Length: 305
Image (cartoon, rainbow, N blue to C red; front, side, top):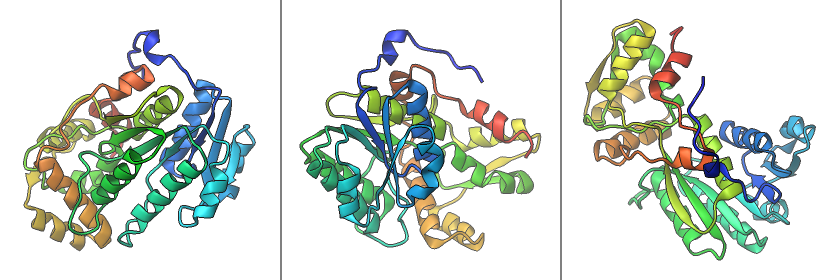
């Protein structure tokens, strides 16, 4: 897939020779960020994980591997030592309320104590506090911790991954129905690959403190998404808009864990309020290339569905 490149001055690198650390490097997003940093020519990449032995393949390629457990602050202080710039990739500890936020706060505190100069954080669209613990609440208070920190930071509010579309694609193709509670509002889905490239771009060039939404090139409604899925798979698929309670019942009946049901429904409600329709040039600005479109993504991943 070929994407249009932007002028060279948009991709000028400033920190390729700094010590650059990626947390969660054994996860899909973290691995992709490390790969992008290596591709860009970063000279000192540090990758951390609770299970550093699983990063032997990166160590063999010259990446420094360190142990870091967000539940054990002492490991974070050791892992972040002598690091100039790092990315805190938000964790997946969603099942226990408050655990994820505590992990993120541990990481921010460790970055302060270790003298890190700049932190990139992967957030979500329009974070706000909620009465009960939630994914979006965790992001809000993590951002607040960054605001109070002495280092500069880049908050990347990653919009929903295009990969999430694939989770329900097979069922939609079989049933001919794509269910959502988005109320007809658009979503600027973005490919995980583009998020990883944007993170790496921020690590090697961001200066000062800034909040950036990371989006795909267009806000697409679920009606439009269903039509594109139909075109790519050759199977008729229509979008069915349901109320949040109906979506909750349907996802629960399908066997999804309660925590995932809540995350999906909350995101749909927020989309219905317009929070997911923002489109920005962040990917282009940080990487020099345009983000993949949904049609390109679906053509690559759903052609055989």
